[in-house]
Image (cartoon, rainbow, N blue to C red; front, side, top):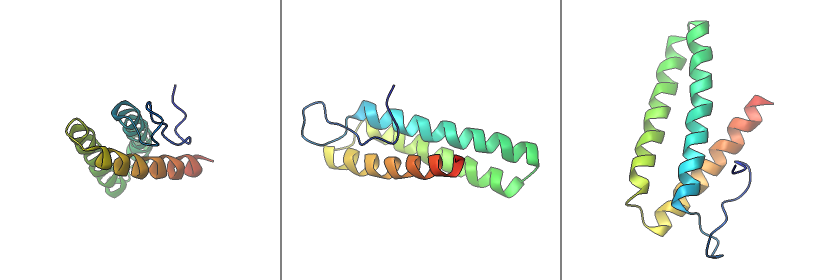
Length: 93
């Protein structure tokens, strides 16, 4: 399994991220947000629930765009999700 805190390697060795790797990272972020959403529901925090639902929706939209993204866009999305994963992992600790 992909280590979410590791940089995205390129299958060609060019330093870019593959669509599959970015898709996996987006899925990991969605999973983290989903866990937070469950906790917010249990805690009755409606505002946080709405915020997390919006974040999950944004992730889903990014995931849909991946199939038609240019290599530059894939790299940009990869960078964003690498940072998100790093931040979410830090929050867990």
